[in-house]
Image (cartoon, rainbow, N blue to C red):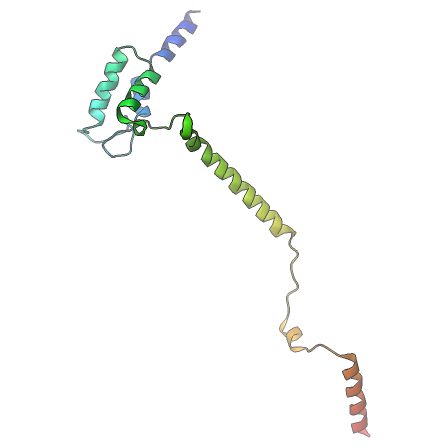
Length: 147
């Protein structure tokens, strides 16, 4: 029973690093607050201090992230939320990959079903089509020349 209570408390208290990784640094580096590698970053240092203050107040992760999203806008969150239009950011890549896989599969099946056309050789191209009537006339005229 004590182990379950400890797990519940650990889940309720957010870790400092988890919160740092959930927020994007606002200095323009494009990294999370945890990963920002600027020594005297004008954004990461105050954000880290503010995270510590909220943890000290006993606030949960969702409350802290909601505070930062309210203060800086959703751009501060390192991952889009699963609400509203942001669901599109989560779902669209999977839909695009699925459609691409279907397209490739159908294209490959179509290519495999296609029967190859016979290849014309240069000898076939030089040989004219034979007309039976003209062939007989040519034979008669050649026979008349020999006599």
